[in-house]
Image (cartoon, rainbow over all chains, first blue to last red; front, side, top):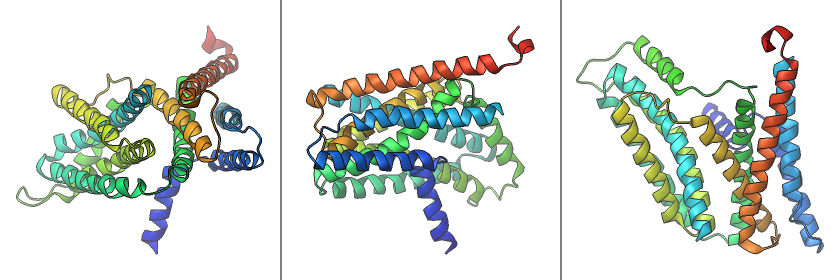
Amino acid sequence: MRYVRSFGRFWWNFIVGDDWRVAAGLAVAFALTWLLGRNGVEAWWVLPVAVPLLLLEAVWREARATAD
Amino acid sequence: MSHDVILFLATFLASAVEAVEALTIVLAVGVVRGWRSTLFGVGAATLVLGAFVVGLGPALQQIPIDALRFVVGALLLAFGLQWLRKAILRASGYKPLHDEAEAFMRERAQAGAVAASGSAQIDWYSFTVAFKGVLLEGLEVAFIVVSFGATQGRLGLAAAAAAAAGVLVVVAGLLVRGPLERVPENTLKFVVGVLLTSFGVFWGAEGAGVEWPGGDVAILAVIGYVSLVSLILVRVLRRRRLAYRPAGARA
């Protein structure tokens, strides 16, 4: 059980890392891209909009925490 | 053609960064505790990594290309954003720069503090630390090689880029016989973060059914766009940090 847990933790850290909010935001952006595309709406812009927003939120939060 | 060059460059740079980190660990342990068991650890980890690439690469090529691009794109994007976030925080001064010389000294002190076994036996400390260091750093390289190579059907090219980076770093490490502190690792990490994020955006969106304006050339625009956004974020954060510094520190 301990090995299963540490195996899971390794992959979580590898892919999600220490900020799960970014990964969750990406999941939403991908879902929106897929949904728009499925309904015939141009969706190439979704990820280029989502990436700066997610980055900004993540670095700003960390910068504020460091400054405090 | 341009796709091949970018793919080679991205894989080469990402692999070089990981190779520097792995080599720092191996050198520190080898110098303090001897090379025999350390090199056994390196060899064992290399075999595991090779099996991973050889086993997973062809298997991935059997998956429909759109599904593969979607999964690989999403993973690369999640992975790339982690690198980019940390690189932006380092470049703007909110996170200390990664220092290979310091990492080398720390690893060396730890290795020296553990009692060594007899010279004829395997030194399990050296073996384990070298194996773990090479395997963990190498797994990131293998992930990038497999995802870049399989998505573009250019596994050989991606593997060649990683191998070239590994050879270059090892030769440089042997020549200087110490930590590769002169490698501009933080700048490399920034560039790699931009490239991984850009490929993640491009392939992830394609896999989700998007057609990029301009077709494949759009990857260049995406790279330029992600670079610009990252540099703007660095600039904004730097200004913020300077503005919040105490008056005495600014003088």
